[in-house]
Amino acid sequence: MKSVFKGMTFLGLVAILLVTSVLTACGGGGGGGEAAKVTVGWLADQTGASASAFKEVRWGMEDYFAEMEPIEGVDLEMIVYDTRLEYGRYTLGYEWLVGQGMDFMMYMSPDTPNVTQPSQVRDKIATYGFTAYSTMMDADWVYSYMYTNELEGRAIMNYVINTWWPSKGISRPVKVGTVGNINRSTTDEFRKGFDKVLADNPGKAVYSTVGGDVSQSAWASEYAAVKDCDIIVMTTTGTSTGTFLKEAVNKGYTGQYLATTTSVLGIWTLLTALVPKASFNGMLIPHFYPLWTDDTSYTQQAEAALAKYRATDAAKLREGTTWISGWLTAQIVAEAVRKAAADAGAKNVDGEAIKDALNTMKIENEGMPAITLANSGTHHVFQPYHRFITYNAAADEWSAITDWMIAPGFAT
Image 1 (cartoon, rainbow, N blue to C red):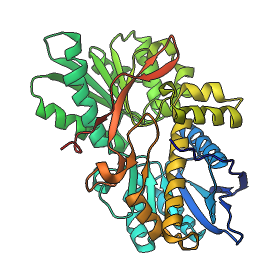
Image 2: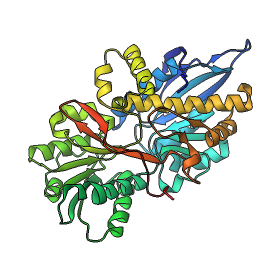
Image 3: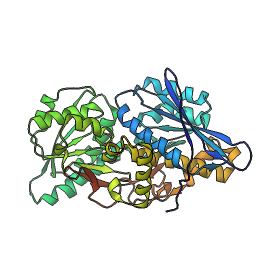
Image 4: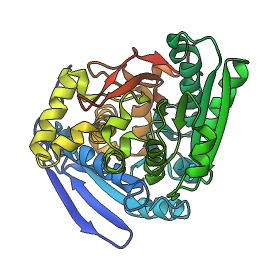
């Protein structure tokens, strides 16, 4: 893999407003003339229920921007608007970012493009985020790294019913419980996927489903409905994952846990403060990003940067996957701008040039499938592949237990 790191200078946090925080990265410029400024807006929770995860993702982005090779002729700036995980702030935040001269937008919640996409078409602003709902997978100007919550739900239930349970050698149907938040649309999307696979595999599973509020602190009645399941799949968000797990551990649950990508990895430090790490031993998660245990040239470069920029927090950050997810996110954003500058000229990098770059770019990192739209058909998804990972409490690390596999809905 060709190195993309040559000491880009990151200028850090330069202003904090009532509703925003702004940070600037120097893109290096070059060529003797004044560099063109390209502004990336990040519309995401900074102080709400998911802020602890996004803080660490943001650190990974900052550190990548600090370490990356400069983009010839471009100064790359990132500005941030805090949604506080409140839907009503998405439109306000989008318009504020546009007013600041945004050329390219990042988001984290799949609800965001549901709100902003019509305005993006009007303003010709491409947006890139972790995931999008199925209604947005083909939407103009909307791009995501991984596939939808619904397809993730299908991948999870298919793995549980047709791989994990048969490996146990038990002839009866598997007892599956799912736990989610009744007031979060992501839970509904996951359950659409679960229901699809259950309908396609009659007689293979006995299914229970429960839910509670995002802020719920006691799960006694909900736990009672799933306590006898062979496996409990959590689609919960934020602290509610920790409070459910605490209830299950206190009540002596001995079955298997499986979590979605949104439930555990982003709030690992919070969860392990509530529940002993030994209780997570063997937990399963579908995963789309590099892992520290991959030990590739890519993770070695990331680990060196983690030690360089986050020495105090490096050991903790290495336990989870948020920082390295931010590192990869920043790489995708930077390489889209880099390709737009190469294809259209640095002075001509605008929304349309970035969109063209997203449509055609290909990033190859050792140890994982290429990041490109080429494997996703008409869908604007860069990574239709996933693998299942598991937690080893004794080693305190996550590692892959399957090869990379293409998701239901993409396989031909």
